[in-house]
Length: 328
Figure 1 (cartoon, rainbow, N blue to C red):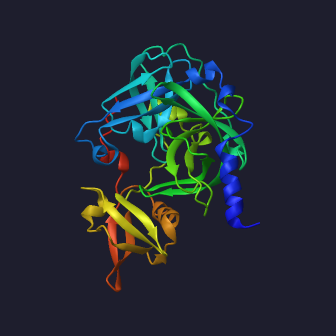
Figure 2: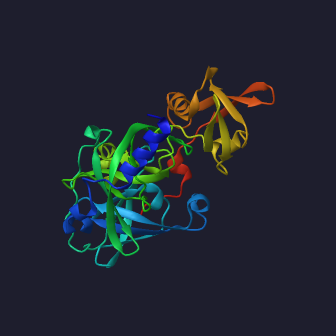
Figure 3: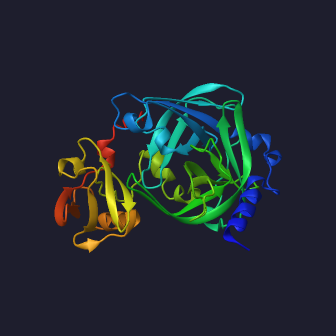
């Protein structure tokens, strides 16, 4: 059987999950999914890349109106609203943001419809082939679809972001930002982050990447009370990067960030850290983060023409750079 034929069969199989259908969503489960709408000041650091108006979904996770979403929707927001399944809109305040996981946390300032919160499941036990449900708040209210977990693997994002065991699903769900990934018992397994062209490594099967819910459990109390995790913060370069061959190429640097202040430029190739070669984004991040806390000097080996030169970047703290201004 050819690989092409296997791929065709796989795509057809994923397109219509037979055992998991939208009819299985209970009204109570759907009611726990809300629309999140955030207004971000034009002068915010992320306004240029993520936009000043952001919309997506969130999930009610406790009876006091605690709403979990994906962090980029509410990052640097000055005003946030959530809309329930009945179309009622209430204001919300930003409680916390965790860059390491990507989670964002809100509190609705009044009762959201009376929805029952979703309980947290166990994402660690979620294996390839598992049947799941994806719920999001679309234009006409909450809706969802069945899907399969097609991969559990490492994910490295160009924005200095790394997950050891991200959840990849197919078929593709259009309203992925902040969407709820749940099991057939209605337990929350993850929060939607991205659309990906290869949910299955090496195969052109479009799907989505979800942040595992297990990453929330150790930091939920900190996010609720402090707005951030007490875990040691990582040194931040302030550069967007991508893997090119055996090296890492700088796509752009954040204006006024550590990389820009150190003379790192878009188009340059990073070959190593402190003389140690790097193999892709994940390897680069781990080598940089192993050096210490924000403020540590990071010796990058940068390819300039035919020569490799050391560029010392005095790392920063991403949280200090962003204009988070939490309302609490």
